[in-house]
Length: 266
Image 1 (spheres, rainbow, N blue to C red):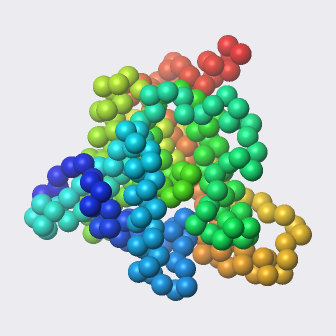
Image 2 (cartoon, rainbow, N blue to C red):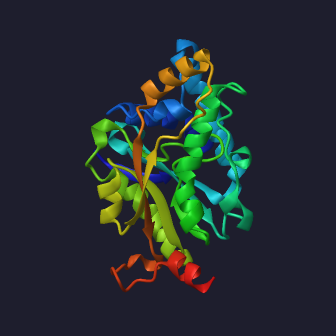
């Protein structure tokens, strides 16, 4: 095994997304079904559609989006892990966005319009983004868990290569860039990834239990559809919002938490 970190190019997306799905199916993580649903029991078609969606999102983000991959050179440059880092040189949240309502928030448009699935997953995406929207209103880097369309699982390692340093390589790429630019870093960590990020200088800010409420007056058909979807996602899904200060040095009670300083100055 010889691991090597490289930029991910557009031609890599089919292999990368297939590996991404494998990583989040082993062990089973139900949130995969929120943003990577399998329609009509057709896994191949759903995977292909998901691949195009992620590639489109990457291209639309322009220079802010940076995908990196780790390959095993001894296995023919097989992709064994990848991460998407987003670089925000300005505050990505407008002043009004902190109080925006659901109607102007993210939309899970891979589900049918006006469907209960679209509404539930849109609310779930809003829950994921609420932490950074509240605390990270400055230039920063992030490994983004979920975005406007499909940007879930933006850091992963396939099962066979876990505990081999893949995650560290992917993380260090972003930390070096952040330090060179003088920026802080943010991410939403799963329970599986929490230890990796903690060991790389990230500190917990708040918990993000994902389990959006829905209206009580759903039709019987919508209630059944929602029950099926929740059975796949298995909420509440737990993530932790984590922060790494500029330079990576943090001392509890000493290091200034920028969002607290901003609040004090208001």
